[in-house]
Amino acid sequence: MTRRVALAVALLVAAVIGASGQGEGAFQKWSPGTLDIHQINTGRGNAAFVMLPDGTTMLIDAGNGGNLPPRGTASRPDATRTPAEWIVRYIRAMGASRIDYGLVTHFHNDHMGALPSVMQSIPIQTMVDRAWPDYAYPATDHAEFKNADFVEYRTLLTQGVSKVERLRPGRDDQFVLTHDAAKYPGFRVRNIAANGEVWTGQGTATARLFPDLKTVPAADWPTENMSSLGIRLSYGKFDYYTGGDIPGRPRPGYPAWHDVETMVAKAVGPVEAAVVNHHGNRDSTIEAFVAALRPRLWIIPVWSADHPGHDVLDRMYSTRLYPGPRDVFATNMIEANKIVIGPLLDRLASSKGHIVIRVAPGGATYQVVVLDDATESYQVKRVFGPFTAE
Image (cartoon, rainbow, N blue to C red):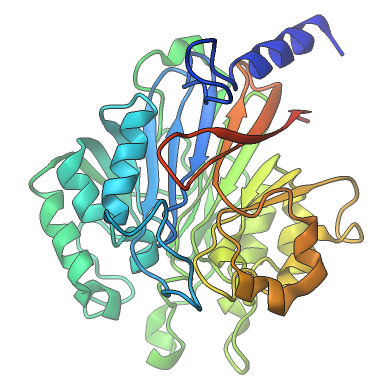
């Protein structure tokens, strides 16, 4: 271990647990130079809050959907507040008073149902989605565009957001550090995919996966999940992927191009951490995707008894698909999952709680911190690592 890496490890360990006077096991908030990625568990869908090295902030999705118990997960910390309220309170507790970039992976309630209320509670400077400004793809009467949450979201775009953009696949200049970019030249966000347009891995070039819809029967048109956004966030040698609900396994009889994961996986390449696509649903996280990304850390946002599929979890753990150790973290695994999946779930590094990936200054090392989600104490339940980024 080099002196620089050893110092980064020491700083990272010190930055996880709070100093004396903050309570035993208290989580130490973000500090300059550190990258924090918080997978927030509200029990009602996806929400990830990111503190970038210079203090720039991102919110990736804010869900309010999914199933209710017993098939679905219970609200966390509880049902006395809405998911939007819990998300806003979490962000403020972590020391942020505004969101520089809001990112909506796609327009399903478990990913954006809480977003309108969040937008009314905390300032968002720039909102990025897959379809601004005309929302004409795949069609203006697309079912999700009639959803009440989407209608409210679109109205708020013209009232409370400073800037709105459509995600541009292939680009690495749409999400930038807004406070002190020159100090952290090793930070970058690469736009991987949106609406079936996927980065090729070369420069900013992209390729179309979906054919011209004029040649496709309406029953075979891309679904909302297939149109999800995907990004790769990099800091030094550390890489992180998240891509909404893109699928990899077409439904029986559907076109082969309904597999979005294979093309995306080729563009993304190996990463240190990845959020499973579509919550680990059975149509996602196929062999080619697992083998291409080969992360040290897998994150599973769970709100249903079928998250993840047994075969999906089996692929994630398979050393035949890629060698070496890996840890799998789930936000809220419930008893129904354990009954169906069985012993594979015993291998989870953590099955309940907010999941924080903390990357040391420079991006050479990183840790995972699991926080208590039963209260707003944000007590550290477990710490994993440090790991070395490769």
